[in-house]
Amino acid sequence: MQALSQSFKDSDLISIADLSRDELEGIVQAARQLKENPQPDLLKGALLATCFFEPSTRTRLSFEAAMLRAGGSVIGFSDAASTSSKKGESLSDTIRVAGSYADLVVIRHPLEGSARAAADATPKPVINAGDGANQHPTQTLVDLYSIFETQGRLDSLHVAMAGDLKFGRTVHSLSQALAHFGARLYFVSPDSLALPDSALHELKKKGIKFSYHKTLEEVLPKIDILYMTRIQKERFSDPGEFQNPCLLKKRHLEAAKPNMKVFHPLPRVDEIEGSIDASPHAYYFEQAANGVIVRMALMGLLLGKL
Amino acid sequence: MIEQTLSVSAIKEGSVIDHIKAGAALHIIRLLKFAENGQRVTVGLNLKSRSMGLKDLIKIENCFLTPIQAAQIAIFAPKATVNVIEDYKVAKKFPVQMPEAIRGILSCPNLRCVTHSESIPTLFTVEENHRSVLLRCRFCEKTFPLAGNEDPGP
Image (tube, rainbow over all chains, first blue to last red):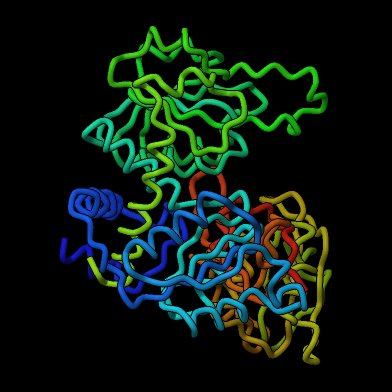
């Protein structure tokens, strides 16, 4: 763990693709230990800059909650309208200055690759909290930790991903991460929202087994995790005509294994029936709550406190 | 071969870049700025080639390519060969080799990539397999097949 801590200290987290299996496991274990033994002064004296160039509810609040609950402080902005980027300032300049004020910078930005550009602009650790449709690595770490918490392991799990697999960055990143752990993956989506070829290419390269399905019923008896995502009706030329084939009903859960948990990165709309919230299979609100502990562990590692 | 060589004049000293994919010569001249420093450059377009069907060819007088320049040529013409000419004779001949990374030369085809709005040099890593060459943008992480007619950027 000490060698791992050294490898994280002062580094950035920009993409799940940058993390090895050992590093992914290291973050999950650090979060587990922190949950079992809370350290309210872990980040005492540390200052986080949250640079959110577009709005986000859960991600920003969970970063801020994590820093405040670990004894640190937060500065930042929650949309680009209140920053100098409105006056034409470059992203690099904004981040360079934010880095000179704070110990750690978290960035969310609509352009793909913006987090990497931000990391180049400051010597302080930078965490990507979403760069357009590209990456959202801390969501994936939260997902991995929640999988570990519910299943007691990460290896050789059967995981289904359902909904918008084409545009949903959480699905791409999670499948990248699970590829390190020999997962068996099931993709459930309408044809027009299937996983892109580039993501499939990556999975094939790593020898991961996967299959495509049209309905949730086909996969539910086989899986340990059902990862639901929202389908945006705007993706279809005639949204009124669109019938979502990936709606989870309470009756579907009768076929599920006892250990099966339902995940969702939120916000959900109608893809999970409300009555499922009280089911022992539902885990999406616990998953969202885990956002705080995982981000706290990550910041602890990047600041050399764990 | 003789007919093709004679169709553009011989040079005493310099470099001849041969076996360029037809249509790529002007990209290469623009990329390496051959036409911008007063060197005499002779270009042959759509010359007949036994192995390639049609090819382009560039001759640059009094210019000897660096390994970096030769690697940059490979981006647009992976089968090109460089002939070093001394006293009208070929003193050395070598194939170009694809670089491991391409910095600051190509624009990212992904219009949502941050490199289009920030003044930062693009950087692509090159992944080669037996079928194709793929470029991966360091910033947006998108992967593109190398077509040989990419936009060299401003």
